[in-house]
Length: 141
Image 1 (cartoon, one colour):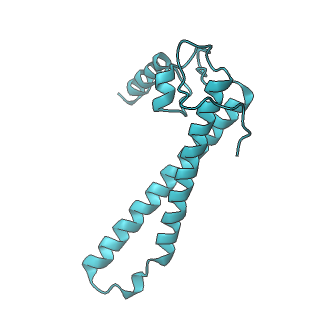
Image 2: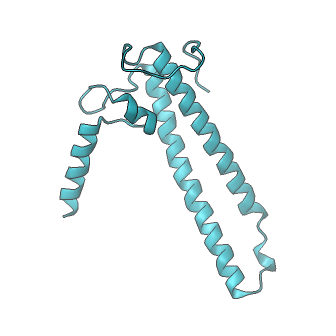
């Protein structure tokens, strides 16, 4: 777990009326990220337990076997996505610790608080993200 930055006032929500990425905002997002990570880890544990406990040897019907395999495949994909997201959360927590959280990795400008609320692992401002997506689309075409 990351170390606490400061004590948040009850009901605190980041605002554009205050200094960007002050101690309160960093602590708010640190808590948000830690909570999200804990939630994902609990889900991963449940998925692993399900995969270990599922007894496919007793399934004799082809449809049951196919359904069990589909369920297992879904669980594996979900676990892989969660693992990648946990890695992004850890990187965001490290940026908080370094003091670079909330700043665009390409331009250095602030990432909008609304964007960080919606996607706390964001590393690019909306403008930089849109530019990145346009470049990716042009490469595909």
